[in-house]
Length: 140
Image 1 (spheres, rainbow, N blue to C red):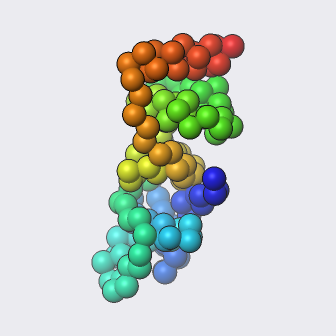
Image 2 (cartoon, rainbow, N blue to C red):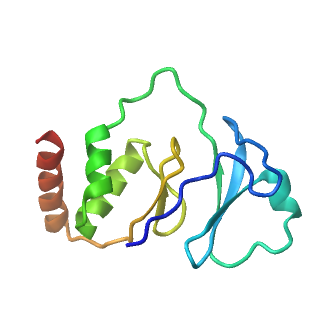
């Protein structure tokens, strides 16, 4: 699986720094190259290219939010099993540590890291077994 690039800290065209609350547009081309644009540059860009497009917003830093599950996020980044990775992505999305950007791309809004996690259909029994396995991995 190829490594996907993080969000840039500034617009690729005019160099404007992305600040909290600012909207941006991202393009991931078919070769895995990522370009991030500020709103003004995106509007004026005529050739947006081929690939995946999405709109994001730089999150505001919160004083106190639900405690992130660092253990689950670390396991998510390291695990190779596609089914477990998909279930962990859904868990981390619910914990607001990941945001689904396209059909299979998830982004960590804090760092801009992208993860390609293909959607997998699980039977209820299989989901229950995976949930128990993941619970034991996280709680160790």
